[in-house]
Length: 455
Image 1 (tube, rainbow, N blue to C red):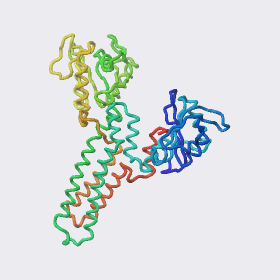
Image 2 (cartoon, rainbow, N blue to C red):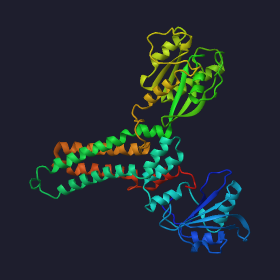
Image 3 (tube, helix red, strand yellow):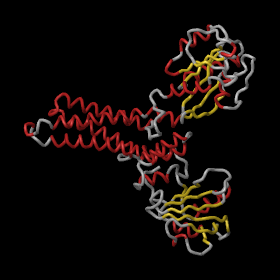
Image 4 (cartoon, rainbow, N blue to C red):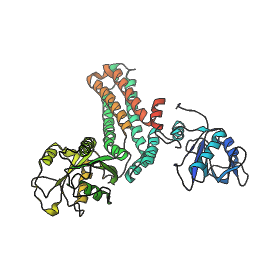
């Protein structure tokens, strides 16, 4: 994808499949010429002569003038459109065939097929949004919970951009001040000049650290958390999955080894999307199928953000349970003592006490899970914009460069001002890539290629 291509582009902007309405979006310099041959309004006023923000009702025509569909044409004139170019959206009856026919006719009339994310890319290149806001749009489309959607809206509205811009401007001021000192003889500078520069740099470190702290929450909101349910056969793992979901997803049986493969289902807890995996019971077995299920359970346990380990509290502690408990990471696990309604034979083991058949202890388990997920992420705070992995990587690199600059200032500020400035300029380069003040073709490709074609 070239950085900017001035062609007129078109794409279907609505999801595939049947629906009440389907939209073909057209943007670029030839949009009026294309729209006038594509769409015939009932009042005979051409699309190109209509005011911004108005609709026309009419017919979509093929090359021979035959009717393809009836619908609406929405007119959006530059710069008051999504791309800040002239845009027309042709709205027809939803359905794969009808939309393909309108798009094909649009391409025949002179548009070319838009590349993934090209409409949003043009919005960025034309100055309507920055890269952080563009990624907020992507996050909103992919949001899997209300909290994730609210955080994405904050990012779209520029709240995260404001924080990055403030840090960028502070680094720019420090670098500019340092460069200014190079024009002076050492004894001409006031004593507090370099201390003031150092203090401003130290304050900026606090802002950097505050943003980095939001990464864990951002990762959970965007990617969700993987939760794996482990335990010996008949500990109640499938019952737990069903109780968490509120419906019977897994087969529950008193026969040991009923679950031989992993079963996955989605669930939202405190605004965080979870992927819960029920696994085969952990035990020694000669059955190849069950052994493969246990191997998969082990693999899921290694990849999970949180492990929920179930123990039958009505029985003496099995050696397998004892071994597993010793290996659990307390920061990434929750222990559930199930079947307490049958009596409790376990002493000295901490965990959530439950009778999952009746639903007792499920709410306590959810609270315990939330407590594990909240380590490094404040899930009780109001939804707010949070950084992604891309932002974190650039922030870490900017932080390292700024730290090197600070180290030079601590040694001998007069002699090392040039070196400190070079490190600050590198930090600015990384920070600029976050919002798009600095960009290159590969960066735009990595961001916008993830979008759907019509966005």
